Length: 219
Image (tube, rainbow, N blue to C red; front, side, top):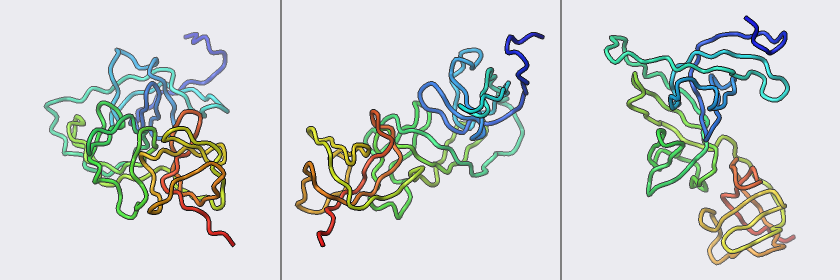
């Protein structure tokens, strides 16, 4: 059959949706797909099994799905529950009271955030690494651990912009006073030299969000 894609080799595999945000996602953490290639107008769920037609798409995505078919789950299946712990990376789409939403389907309580993340309060746009288990049919999503996909720090960097309750550090690190740890009595100002703890997050044109800002010690 002529696929209209030249000599590109196509492969069909079965996999599991491991992340999904807005209109794109990943299958088995290695195959990129966009929502327009999903057949039957079926909304995908993280943890869902799919059949995928894959082509190589270097250097942009590596492996890219050109067709995704959802594998139906038999309601009367006698298979044992699959409680294996899995990992997904997802972007926070909203937070309501004490619940974090990665999509309209995937959500979990705020208290699932891993102990030891003393500065981290999830915020819309943050990328999270979630350890979870499911029951057949994805009726029970049980998150056991939630942490940022990446967390790092920078020392002696300058606050470059503040507007209202939002600001920018070094022209590349977003922060909001609604979700950042500050020393008692400290109010960030433009040109302050600070130490920052930051997490991976999609905030406008920025890829990092500060979760802790501390004035740098002057020598």
